[in-house]
Image (cartoon, rainbow, N blue to C red; front, side):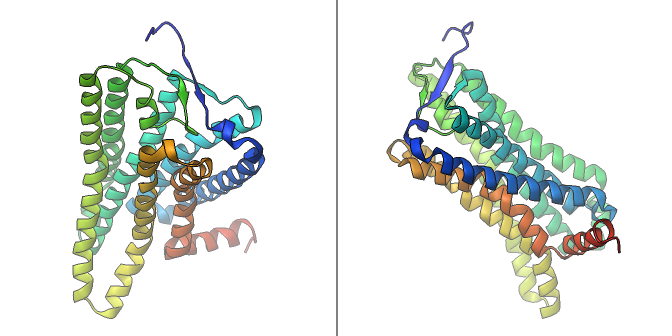
Amino acid sequence: MNDSIIHTLTFTIYMEIGPHKSTFFTVVFLLYLASVVVNVSLMLLLYLDVSLHKPMYIFLFCLLLNGLIGSTAVWPYVMVILLTNLSIISYEGCFVQFFLLGSYGSCNFTILTAMAYDRLVSIFKPLQYQTIMTPQRVKLLLFLASFIPTTLLIGQIIQISQIPVCTYNLHRLFCEHFSISSLTCGDTLQIKRSMLYNICGSAIIVVFPIFLILVSYMKIITLMLKCSKCARQKILDTCLPHVMVFVIFTLSSVFPVIYTRLSSGLLMQAHIFMAIIYILVPPLLHPIIYGIKNQEIRHSFSKMWKRKVLFI
C-alpha cells in the first residue's frame, strides 16, 4: 500500500438497502435519539445529585458514556450515508471507527468487571467498604478499565495496518475488526501474527473479565443461599441491575461473532438487525434498567423532578 495515497473504502451493502433506506433511517434515528436522551438524562442525574457520588454510580456514569461513544461512532455516519447515498469512508477513518467500536465493546466488559468488584466489596465487607473503595482505588480501576483495552486495540491497529490492502469494497454497514482484516492480502505469517494478537487480546479484555464477573456472582450467590430472606432480597436489589446489564451486553456481543463468521452469506436485513442489537440496544437499555431497578436512582429522579419541574 502506498501510504502517500488516501484510499477510499466503499460500503457495498447500502446498494442492497435501496428502497428500504427511509425505513432504516427512521428506525435508527428514533432508537439513537432515544438512546442519547436516556443516557444523557441519567448521566446528568448522576452528576447533579451529590448523594449519588458513590463508586457504583461513578462506574455507571462511565458505562453510560462508553455506550454513547460506541453508538455515536456508528449511527450518525450510517444516517449520513442513508441521506446522501455516499457510502464511502477513508481508510484512516475506517480505523478510527474500528478503534471507537472496539473500545466500546472491550471497555464495557472491563467497566462491568469493576462494577462487579464494587458489588462484591459492598456485600462481603460492608463495614470496610469506604476504606477499600477509596477515590484513589476507583480512579485506578477506571484507569485500568480504559487503558488496557485501548492499548491492546492500538497494538491491533498497528498489526493490521502493516498488512497490504488489496480490495476497497466492504460488504458491511460500518468498519470493525473483521471488515478491515478482510481487505488485507499480506503473507501468511503477517496474517497469522495479527490473528494470534487478536486472540490474545480478546482473552484479556473479554474472556478474562467475563470469568471474573462470573466468579464474583458465584460467591455472591453462595452467600445469598446462607442468608435470611430479608438479607437475600437486599443483596438481590443491589446486584440485579448489574446482572441484567451484564447478561444483555454479553448476549448482544454474540451477534458480532455471528456477523463476522457468516457476513458474506447473510441477508441485508440480518446485517441491520445484528448491528442494531449490538450497538443500539445495550446503550438504550442500560440506563432504563438502572432507572427502573435501582431504588436510589428512582428516588433521586423523583426528588429532582419535583424540585426542578413541579417546583415542590
